[in-house]
Image 1 (tube, rainbow, N blue to C red):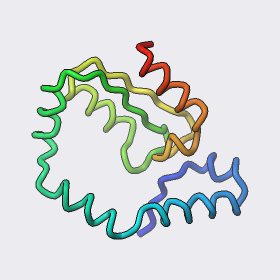
Image 2: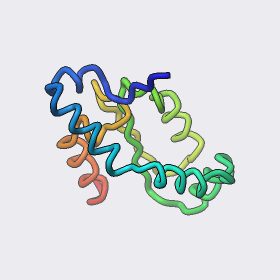
Image 3: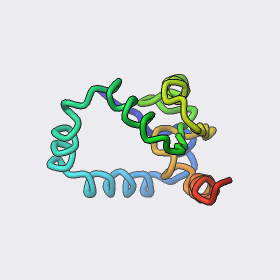
Image 4: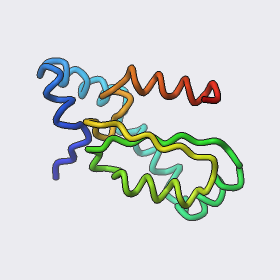
Length: 119
């Protein structure tokens, strides 16, 4: 099974060597033990209970999604936004897959800073 988390535009904008280095870096920084620990921490987490806890926190939340994301579609992120029912902002990034912060880092950083500064 192949999981494509990067958009075609990201791959086309970057040469093969850069994309390969990016993938290698992700693999180096996300070892199997890290994935296992993450799964262990979340295995008993009920998604509905998680949403309830986030709702109870009354936090401001900004959600980001790439319009080519195959792991979490724009529709799924919009549904999450609706379920949270908080002061939530959804930003959709054109031409990005799941790794928005890697595929469009300047715009993502600008948007995060604006959100943190109350914009």
